[in-house]
Image (cartoon, rainbow, N blue to C red; front, side, top):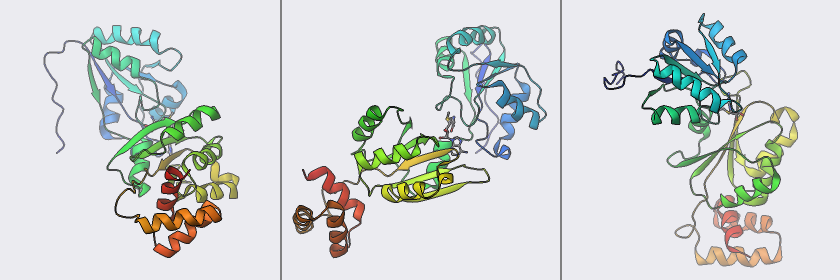
Length: 289
Ligand code: SAM
């Protein structure tokens, strides 16, 4: 039930508002975000240019201070001093929810240490918006941010996630998506279900849903498929220890894959027993040596 914000009386300092901004469509900004951005004494921004465009669109004129990965320590001290003087400050990033793979963590931690009130506003976040549309279970999920840029680190991380049963969310970039999906196939398999959610709330918004192998083929089809802002969602490892795989299915798959490639063995077994290929494939790569 929406309500008017209750302000606690025992905090004497200023307030830091965490204000999410749209991840594409400016209409997604909330009424409350606009009120706060107009009302505060200062807005701490990741990038002056980006925020200036947003504010201009809503006819908001306010003072801005830069806070980014390079200057966060120094700027935190400055901002905390202002908050202690009773100023109201809003924190915004270039898009989406600040601190979610964006600057602000040091500042927020310091606010808590200094007993300065932090008020988070609900709003856009690419990871959660993508998850909501993915068609992959969202009962349990983990957010992993961006995959490491170095191949070895990327493969190590993916290998460590091979048996993760929760849905896994990654942020991805156009120049790395092909490498990442190739490594996902190498470390997790060809049959894991993935969903790539691109350009949310923008003109080229698109959702691709399929196995890791199908996603790689789709990306390779057209250079444009790799473009845009994107979130990659990986279905968690399906634990097969019980009901689906009987000893008979296991034996069949095991014997066939000794004679032909694992991929073909999985396809055949899947046809014989009407079991999803990704279930059989995941089982095989985790149990057969
Ligand atoms: N703080 C932001 C949030 O709450 O989503 C995320 C910032 S992170 C630096 C930027 C990444 O978010 C992009 O590389 C992309 O993976 C994802 N992203 C941002 N906007 C998006 C959009 N409109 N569609 C899909 N992914 C998006």
